[in-house]
Image (tube, rainbow, N blue to C red; front, side):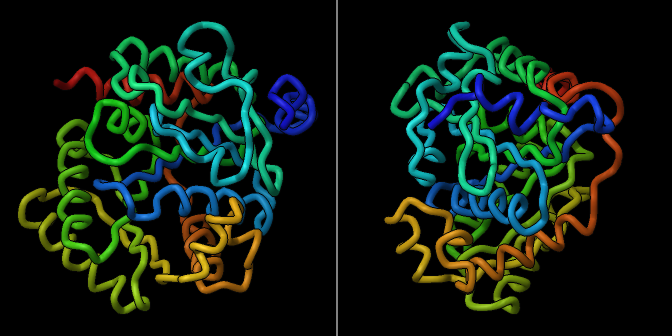
Length: 294
C-alpha cells in the first residue's frame, strides 16, 4: 500500500489552493470497555461517509499500543504512529489509503510503551496534526477503550464524542464511568450515545434511557444525546474474517443500512463552529485544557 508521500498531492492537497480552508469535523469514537464493536463502527462510518456522502475522511487509529484498523482493512503500513513519536516520520508520511478513498493513520500493535504516553508526548502528537492538510471534511478518531490517559486525551481533543454501548451491563457501567471522568475534565463536552448490537430501535432507545437516567442523577449538566442504533448482525463476522468493512462487502446487510442511517443523522446536525486555526492547533488547545486537570 502506498504511503502518504504519494498521497498528499493526490487526495488531501491537490486542489487545496482552490478550496476554502476549513476545520474538519473532529469526531472521537470510544467506549468504556472493549469488545463492543467500536473499531467496526469507526471503519464503516468512515467508508460510508466517503462513498455515500462524498466526504474526505481521515481515520486516526488512536488505540496506540494495540492498533488494528489496518488489520480490519487488510492494509500493511510501512510506518505507524510510533515512528512519528520517535521523530523518524511526520504524520503525512505515515498515511495510507484505504477502501473508498479514506485515509488512515495507523497505530503500532504490540508496543507496550505506546499504551501510556506522557502528557508531553500526547501534546506533541496532537501538535503534529499541524502538518496535515486542511483539505479534509471529517477526522474520525478510533480511541482505545477505558479511561487511560491516551483515551482521555483523544476524546478531549475531539469536538464530538460518540460512545458505543451494548446491552451488556458491564458496557453500560463502563460507558458511564468514562463519561464521568471526561465530564469532570470538560463539563461542556457533548456526548453522543450509539447503541450497538441491539435487536431494534426500541431496545436501543431503552438502553439510552437507562444510561441517561443515571447520568441525570449523578452527573447533572452532562450533555448526552441519542445518536442511533445498530442491529446485532451475524454477517458482520463474515466481513471481519474477510478483512473488509461490511458496508463495502455487504452494503445491504442490516448493520450497513443501520450505519448509513446513523451517519445521515449525524451529518444532519453539524456541531458548533470550531473557530480559527488548523487541525493541530484546535486539538492541542482543547486537549491541553483537559490535560491540565489532574
